[in-house]
Image (cartoon, rainbow, N blue to C red; front, side, top):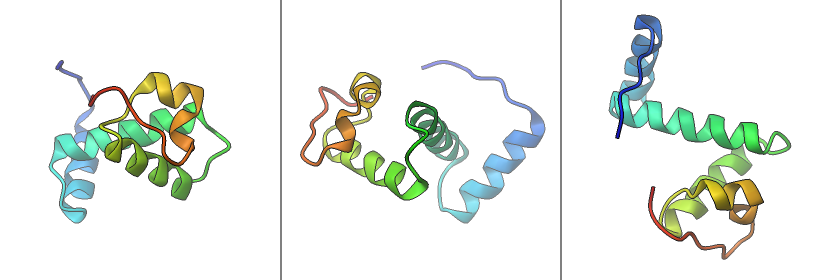
Length: 84
C-alpha cells in the first residue's frame, strides 16, 4: 500500500462520485484506476466490456495486470492467480 497525492479538486470529485455510488473515497479512486488501466490496455473495449472484465476478474480472485495485459480476462472462464 502506498500514498498517492492528488489535487483537492480530484479529491472532491472522488468524494462526490463515491457518495453517489455508495463507495468510500478510496474505493472510488481504486475503481477509476482499474477502469482507466483496462481502458488504456484495451482501447477497443467499451465501458460495458470493461465492467464485465472487472466482474470476471473479481470472480477469479482479483485483477491481475499480467492476465489483463494478455487479454485473458476477456475470455469467459479465465482465472486469476491471486487477489490484488
